[in-house]
Image (cartoon, rainbow, N blue to C red; front, side, top):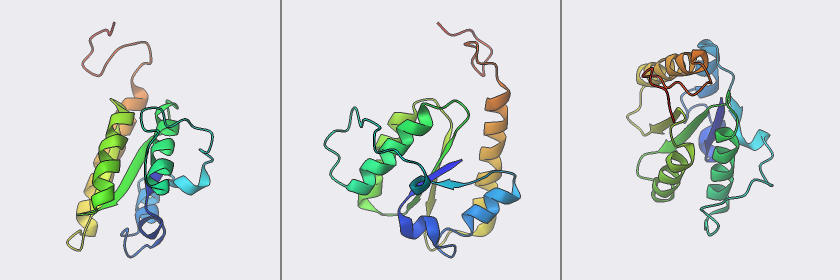
Length: 143
């Protein structure tokens, strides 16, 4: 799982409620976006992204989207103006690919975060078991 977000969220365990450790507890390896070279990824629909960090997050989202067994978790804070734009664009890039937007604030609790992580892990397990032959989760054949 590739984790995107602001560095102070990604690397401060008190702020991110031990996200890396908690992902490991449920059998998921967390790779911070800084560990992936996305400098050559074209921003496509977002050539005028004002924030450099926003551009890196969106490039990383495109990287994740292009790989079938790589999934994304975007870590954000409540009431962050820039993140409200970036989150919208992140979801747009991901389209139907499962991703988790984890928004934290001073009221976030470990139990709630663990529940979201476990639920997302279940979604990923189901997604990876699904055949790649154009069959959607509903069982209908896509065009």
